[in-house]
Image (cartoon, rainbow, N blue to C red; front, side):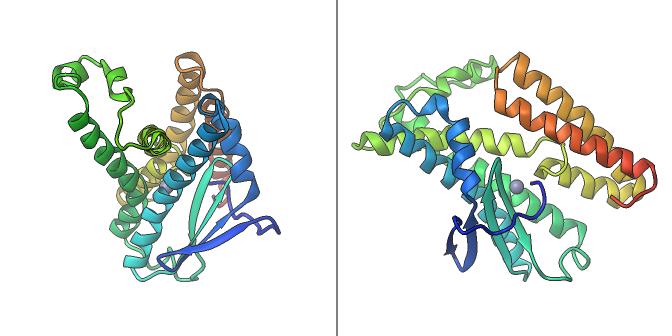
Amino acid sequence: MFGRIQPTPYDVCFRIFGIPVRINPFFWLIMVLIGQNFMHTPVSAIAWILAALISILAHEMGHALAMRAYGYWPAITLYGFGGVTTCDSNTYGATRTTTSKIVTTAAGPGVGFTIFGIILFVKILLLPPGTITLSGIINSKLAVLFTPVAYTKAPFLNALIELLFIVNLFWSFLNIMPVLPLDGGQILRDILVKFFGHKGLHATLIISVAAAAIIAFFAFHQWRAFFMMILFIMLAVQNFMALQAYERGQRY
Ligand SMILES: [Zn+2]
């Protein structure tokens, strides 16, 4: 999310479907800080870390597998506030079409929303009939969606699935916000640049600054989500600096 991350001796490295994954130590630190509300016991702390790891990794795997489908060789790094999927090929970017860019970007939140949807489907089947109704959801009685359910006989697994439900929804929703370099911001930029050229990039930067500022305000004022506020303040500042550099005629 914030540029290339240098390897450290404390990185955890492995491969999934042949795609290299590297986890920077700051990933664990930030997940522990963000997850305070979910970590009441050592067991719930492990469930939280696992849920955060699986959700963010699944999101990046969405990007990575889409890149593989287009013939590129991606690598995943998890760090700090999230993850990044990169390609080292020099031709990557230059040879890509707008459609392939949008597909690879959308694949990340697409995987997250799919996991959320599958758990939601199972949950609706397991809840007493009439607990979740369309009219209830339309009238924004959404709290009922988060009623814990016994998916299995194992309490730990149930807690993990419940967290996967929440984290995949939150992480996918956060990532489709129209703020660079989040997925939503990248898709917006690709579409606007396709139709308006350089003016499209200028417009995306302006939208990114405004949207990040509005989300930071809501994160603090409505949701009391301190880390989300910090994240979007950082994104607002980063986009504001990029906007100033762009308007001075420098390369963004
Ligand atoms: Zn993403």
